[in-house]
Image 1 (cartoon, helix red, strand yellow):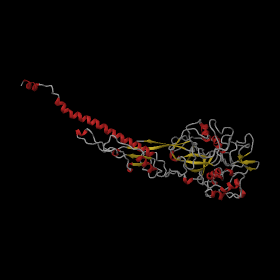
Image 2 (cartoon, rainbow, N blue to C red):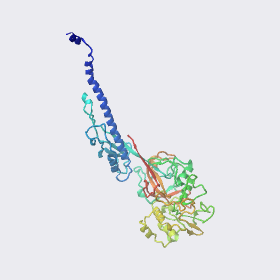
Image 3 (tube, rainbow, N blue to C red):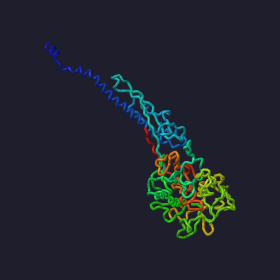
Image 4 (cartoon, one colour):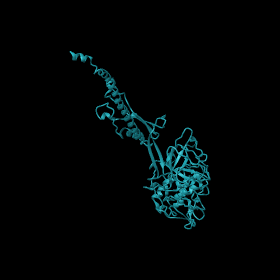
Length: 511
């Protein structure tokens, strides 16, 4: 009885009821902490999956056919993600993080104000992964059974830069208050007065004559000469979305551009530190003496305009009696009639050039050039200067023999270049085309281009064919650059050879 009384009076286990009561709260708190960590982990997994899917989708937004379908497929299948913290099913299959087609949405702008309507204008993509739940392991003790639906969403775009291009630009000739697009296809074969200093209509915009800031190389005009003349131009890559203009009329820099035509003037044309080889096809309207110390420069002792040059009086084809003694690829007839031309598009021509005169002068009156162009797969009525240039490259015997013009000669292949290869650069394989350049098309009015403008949006990058060297002729100035539009620039596109254009695309997350 004494032991029973002692036990009744003992307080050794008085804390047990308190612990028993508190145990429920302690277990509940531990359960909340444990399952909250799992919930946060699942949310992170879903967001990571959305990020990867959006980045994968953005890599496909190249503006080409099926870009959106390729992007959707990339988001859905390129990466397999498992939600290890989610347990909405018992098998690994049910742990897969999936993306429904409806969860991939394309936009034209970064602000997500305009949905994309075509593959071409799909610039950004938003990916939302399908929902998952986390069934809690411990928190059922406090009455919670599972989380609600969790998901992840990411928004991405692709940053693009064009590298190894000369620093040139021109204002969008198709720009209006209602249209800020540029259709390069509609202008294929059209002549373009890219840079006009001494003649023509002056600058494209106040203070801007057609040059960009390369962001590298030497300062001032020296940097432009390097970028225009060197086989491997210096400078930063130019953003597809924004460039900086370089104001001023740099008449001296075209000496470097002329090296592409086998003209090396006064030792200043090719800046030290790089090489300036010509194209294998240097057909031009200039003639020269066969020897002499200055025979490779511009002037009376070297390359010069013939005494009977191509100077049409009207924007129509010449008659046989009007043929010049020497002729390269000519300007559009509406540009060739005078220093300012008569083209309705101003600095943009109409693509109508005197094809018959070119072949008559360089191939003879008996040559059936129409049949030759037809056999080459070209329409003789619409064949472009660039297409004739490529045809001559494929048939080098057509231009390899000098043609006598009085006491001088007209040449279609390099004679002044002393480097390797001696025949100049033949486009193809890893060789670039020295008579092709890329140019940025910008909306000068909408962007307010004036002087040294920075981060100017680029509408398109286009490929141009250099029609003629920059020379003080009867109707041209040494600071002028005349070209023909080939088409829109893409990596390896518009007939570009390997290394001609380097395009760098880097996807990036926005949100």
